[in-house]
Length: 240
Image 1 (cartoon, helix red, strand yellow):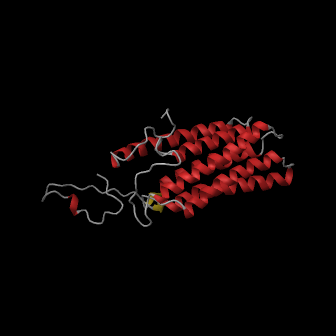
Image 2 (cartoon, helix red, strand yellow; image 1 turned 180 degrees about the vertical axis):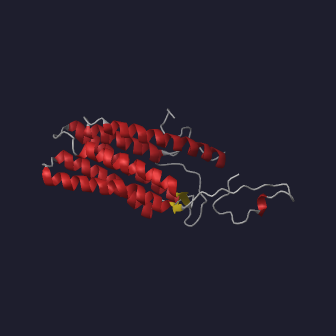
Image 3 (cartoon, one colour; image 1 turned 135 degrees about the vertical axis):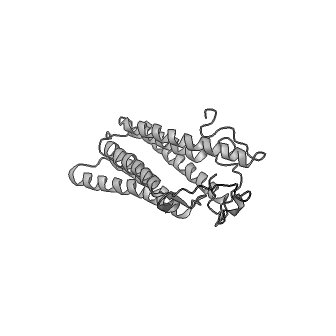
């Protein structure tokens, strides 16, 4: 049995004299969740700025280079602001080792990997296909933000209580529309950069991880709200 974050006394778990053995595990140094999120997103945000600045010194910046940089800056800038002003966290902290692992993923793949392959190597030139991909990216980023705001409003400030999610955007169909819209945003981004197939790989990796989280959250919602919960899918409508 794992104790809850707000458990203060363990006597409630003892069921009789000399009959209960309690094992304690030291999880090591902890980092609060807001700090974890900020570290995760500040990394790629700053890496993209540095890549773009140094690139600008030595190479001509096409309009498409600038737009790719702006799209990445928008995404990670939005996530930083959401971490500061939108998200309300159900758990108090994460083990430091887990935080370092997450930062390695975001800084390495989201920062260096996307920055070097997409900001530096994207082909110049625009067409109607690029405009559609850009509008789609902005739309899905906006819907992702709407889902995060909806989740925030389901949790009263200063509590870990949450209400059953439903309604716009897409909560009556999937458990995690925020993950679904983020996946679509990265697909739109990959279609915009077009020839850099690394961007498609990033979308696939991120989508796979979000799907794992979504399946767990879907099961938790069904357990917590057995009569109210309406969504039939975890993340992608009619698929998973």
